[in-house]
Amino acid sequence: LRLELLFCVEHLRKTHAMYETFMGRVKHGTNTPFATKIYKVVREIEEQIDELQDGRKGEFRSPLNQIKLAAWEEYAFQMSRKSSKGSPRQNLYDLLEIWYVALRMVVQ
Image 1: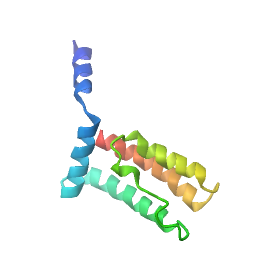
Image 2: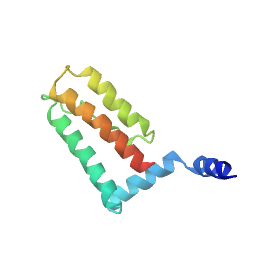
Image 3: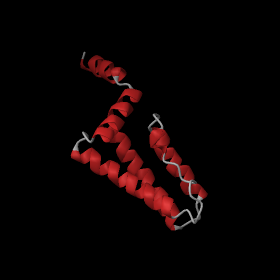
Image 4: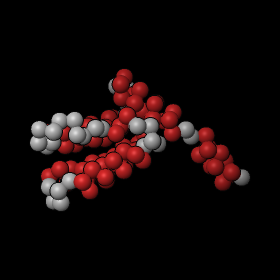
């Protein structure tokens, strides 16, 4: 019976609703302090990456507007692979991938 209840609760979770709720809370400043800190770290790393674009502004596009949460870390992984090995940009993408996972866990 307990497993059935767990499955039912998990089945009722809707990713798009969790995403929209979280982003709404970001917009209105009503997230928990913990969630706010994680979100701010992610945004700061994104800003650092954007500043390293060597005049190629716009190459980095934050994936946070995508409802598919796993796409966030996949984007960072792909961008890391495209960066020069050992470069500051690659290091930041690797770090960002980890923080996207942390943010996804908070959103879910």
